[in-house]
Image 1 (cartoon, rainbow, N blue to C red):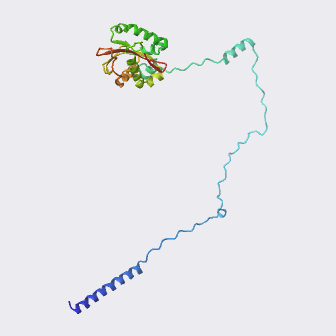
Image 2: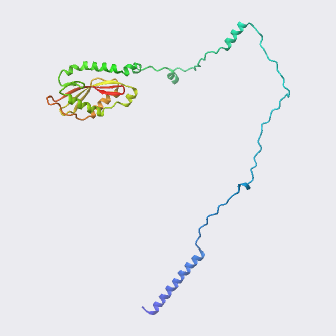
Length: 268
């Protein structure tokens, strides 16, 4: 590479550098940087210098002129006198308040209004007295006694017991079952609020491991919500333990009475 070529290259680079610097200076000269606007100073207005607004004049009601400036006294009017007894009876008849008779609008037969105004017939359940729907403590005790007399023949067979019995052999087994039931048994809130009461007798079959294999509802309490809660409770409990050693049969039957009364529940 010759010296002449190097000198030419250096001159070209120098010219390009000068042109770039001139371009930068020209840009700064013709396009100066924008300075940020200073915040405006607040302007205070003196309210005392403002002119008071001109309100329209109030419109006053024109007074009516009296036709006569002098007061005139009018003679009092009086009705002619008559027979006191007859006049008194007429006045009493006229002034006596008449009984208020409700106005009945004519109703077109067959219309929807006629069906609304017609009293509805009570259903068989609504016509029942409250004592049958919500039996008291005495009624519940009588129902339990009647159920015990009805199913006492099954107890005589030997493999069936009443829960509320003084059985020495199955005493511990029955107490375990009772504790398991009270752990999951509830009084339905809707039935407790409405005061629905009753007894649901059931026959429960256990195997030797203490598991429930069959549930038979013997009678209805009269309320479906109570019966369904009893069945739900028996399906929810688990095994309650094996049979006593002296009992050699494969199944054991238990008759229990699930009693609802006074917003409380009792297992008998």
